[in-house]
Image 1 (cartoon, rainbow, N blue to C red):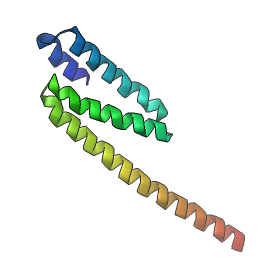
Image 2 (image 1 turned 45 degrees about the vertical axis):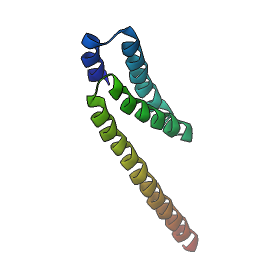
Image 3 (image 1 turned 60 degrees about the vertical axis):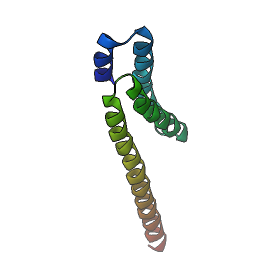
Length: 99
């Protein structure tokens, strides 16, 4: 997002830069909320905003979609990893009870 702001600064007004700055700040602040479902919802909204910033910097249509794909991949892989971890911990607890 920072690089998109650098591209936008020469050809667009202050409003476009402020919106880009807010999106960039939201990217940074969302990191702290990722342990709750609220963080994933806010993060998804930020991904949509990144794609929408393509109105200002057309390359952001591509980059925003690329990062949104990574976002979805992280969500899917994370859920699978958590399911595997939960099954492992459940099996470990069952084995300890049998011992």
